[in-house]
Length: 325
Image (cartoon, rainbow, N blue to C red; front, side):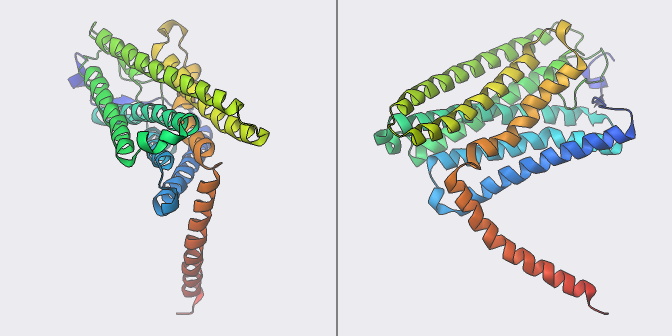
């Protein structure tokens, strides 16, 4: 293949050759995907429908859940289709679209996590200035900046990657279109431009992580001055998991994009990809929201409102099904 225009499709990694194992991976990914859909869907519905929790913190949580739903929907359904139908092919345009949306959503998510750490810092360390610093207009502007920055980052990476000439095959050793895997196909030195852009993006993410860590250090200092042991325990049990997920997300992502090819292996790449692509959208609802008392109350309200209607339709359906013609 002389250049990228001659490639019409890429081949994603086949996890297993045996049909039984393919179905096992399908059901595993389906369970993870449904858990992410359920958790993030409940949070989005609860925050949207309950006007009592229309505050900056929950506004950012709503955006986080939207990003998590989008990011896991960009990669996992295609992998499930590959497992179920035993097909590895993804079109050139489909691969480019997957890279674009994945980078958009992941970049916006890390920016939003940085904003959320600032929100918690102001709420705990400067509570008297909370409404001034985080008014509704400021929150909208910060969320829009996160989405806009993600869009710009995704556009740059996608344009740089798919403008390269490819001549070293088209079999991607990953279950989704990952830029480091695609760059292996490049047959010119122009790939160094995209490699430099990846390094620049990682530096920005590292700066965000430093800001997040410093915010939590200030939060921990304020929490240690709380006289109530229960209050300290509650604050630490909330903040430490936040920091752990952010660290997992950044460290595995950096390893995937910065590791030298000499230490790369197929099983290692798969594990790392699952840790930064699949795990965060499932864990974020549990850590950021579903342990929150106000979210739990809002979800209960929704469940009690929706379930009676659901059961009524179910009973009516059963009646019509068993009714004699």
